[in-house]
Image (cartoon, rainbow, N blue to C red):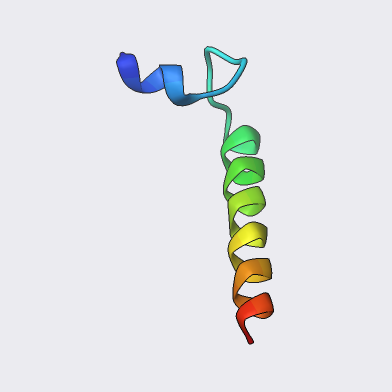
Length: 37
């Protein structure tokens, strides 16, 4: 699957990796919104 290439460094995306990845992006979004306010 070409989609797996979007996963950095790892061939498998474990639930933990997914959570960490989403949380990292989520934190960035929150910080950006906070700066706007």
